[in-house]
Length: 301
Image 1: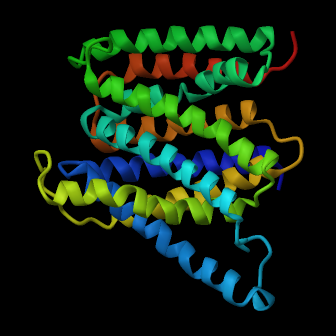
Image 2 (image 1 turned 135 degrees about the horizontal axis):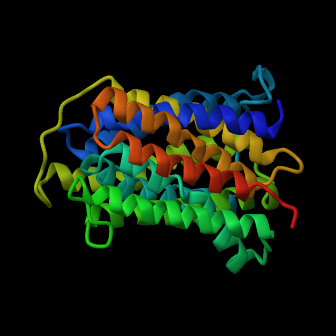
Image 3 (image 1 turned 45 degrees about the vertical axis):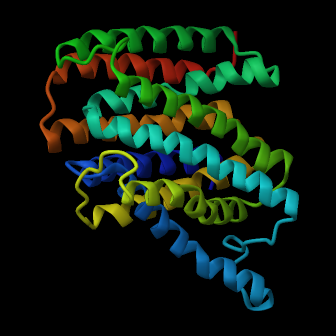
């Protein structure tokens, strides 16, 4: 499959992942939801890792084969886990306290920050169309601030909006780092996903234990089957994503905007399942944001 089609599949699954997150977090403590979702993903990959290491000759599929990285590669993968954990902590707390039809579009601005960081850190040069897309996304984001005021969400003073913006910025850094791991460092998609999924458990374990010991006010935690579903949906979405990036000629500046099209599913889910308000103005902002995402994919000019 082409890397564009794989990116579209990843976007579809990400939309359902956002819906599962919102369901799992509704009136529920954030850190245990996040931790047990991570554990579910690690448990899926653990048998693949063990089989690949202990009996590589009998392993049935090269696509899911997990290499044994060198020490410096383990450190690179651990850093990937730390980036993802930081983004998720900010993002989960924000999603718990914001309407999905507000949080999703903020997260969808990730391609904007990916391109800007690529310009600053990697010397990339966006086209005129891409700069236009950046302007349209910023305008849509600004428009969302007015919609948010109708729900008593003031973007410049709301800490949960700030958390979602922080999650988005860290996610953009993580996207650039994915390109480095898969194209520059030459790691295989299954190797990256398996090891960073496993390393997420020790990265997040201290936060979960601190929550258990009451280091800060504890919310009530109820087990729901949407919690492991979070981990499984993200596994599938990320596998398509990593496979797309690893293909020759794949462009992270195109893949990232495609993946953010998941906002359409999360937006519709927020309206239909959670009866969120202000459908029409949010829909107009979504259309503007998606138009900006399309412009980001144009290279000419």
